[in-house]
Length: 246
Image (cartoon, rainbow, N blue to C red; front, side, top):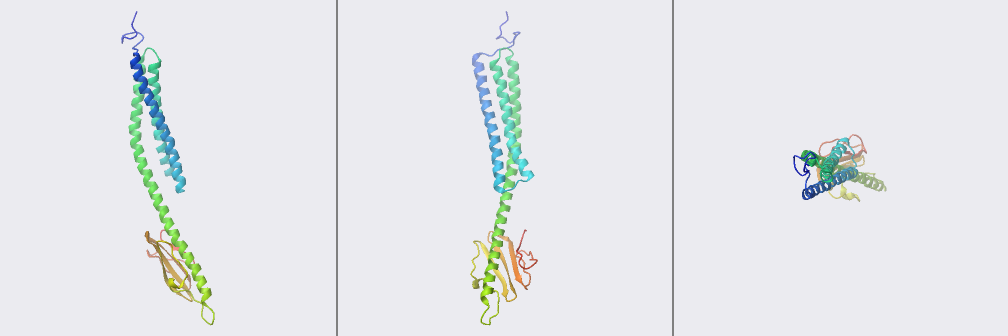
């Protein structure tokens, strides 16, 4: 009669109860790590969706990068769960334990290699995603600063029309204000409004923002020389706000 515990047995090597306990703990840890990585994948998928909703930008490159970031931990988690199942097979079956263990070692090796490669790619993708997000945030910030300047110029136009309507009477000619001090007007925080000219024929003005001095706006009404922004962008027609970068 052959001894199943001996390597030369026809049935193959059988691990002892203590060895099976160690293998079982390793399988349990591999399974928990796999489940944790799967949860990370779901978390990054939700984070990417939230980031795109918050930015209001659903471009193809952004979607693909966040999808890859989410799929990498999912793939790693799947490999570790598979390795855990192989280790469970070693514990739950009798005979051929070495063969089952080698299958488990192969699965763990594949899982670890996938994790090393995937984590390297994942780090690069995270850096790319952060750079894209920062770029989009800066672009959104710049648009907000320009929008404030446009709003101030439109408010200035309203103030000028009120001034013009009140300037006539008692034989006086109707005219637009030639300085901001003559108007009931307050610029937004950080915005500098410069009234370039004002008179009976019309008026012109430009704005700048202290946080974005290279992107200003300009506007004019009436028969006046068309002004340009501080960076040189020229207005095209009366009543139209023109801004740098737009």
